[in-house]
Image 1 (cartoon, rainbow, N blue to C red):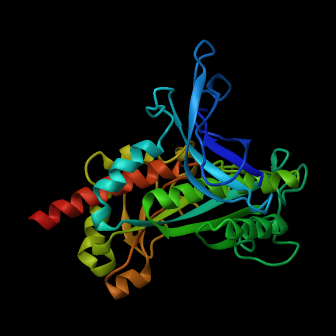
Image 2: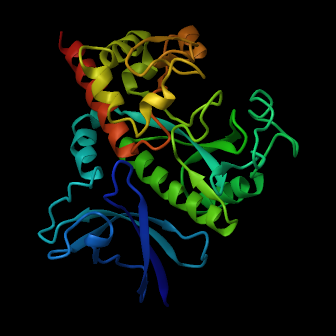
Length: 339
């Protein structure tokens, strides 16, 4: 039996990393071997010493090729098998393990924008569509652009066994969202990266670009975020832990430490308008989509549940945002338990 294994990894492009992939032919699927690549072509090495290692860490069925073929997500290692500096998954792993007893889980809402050339899908050449208002969760040819791509992406993600929990059209024409989770930190991040790869791959077939740019259309249009929903066992059981987590995210230098790592173009998107808080101010509140962190209304009513960090950009690295939130919130929750 011949297996096509698509090895996927995250490159070293700055300020926003890109996905790369290539195909390895295997005799069977019993073992996924390490593989190598030219890091000088992916902004991860110099030409005089360019060999880097792909370490398989997550695999799932390849829903495009079908059969027994696989998608294989990899970490990038040096040839001495230590993590490459671009390997943000390696930084998340020890944090996730340290606080595993608190059972942190995430749901990430991935917004993105379809572009045809340099214009969002649905924007007429040389002009603008009607102001935003009717596009969010809309229906009809005058409101919705790219649904056939979105539906195919959803079907492929589900066929791959990824933990998608929903899709919807967003506020700007050509802008959509899919949600992954609720899953543990490493799992939600792995699934998100593979879902992103599938999104780019499907859009490619339609001659469209799926952009994760934070502010793809300047002016009076919503940006694109990756709202990150988070809870621990204590938060799912009581409201005091909810407030503790919200306050921990706003303590001292934490707000700026986080937003500086929440994706490229954060200042363009977090302006205080278009359902955002200013990037340099921290706030939290119930049902408040203008706050940095929102406590959903049902959480306030039931006095337990989760919080939504609304600051991460669409282009945020899920390994980074989950590491920051787990480290900040779980450290404080553990400290409060010891008092």
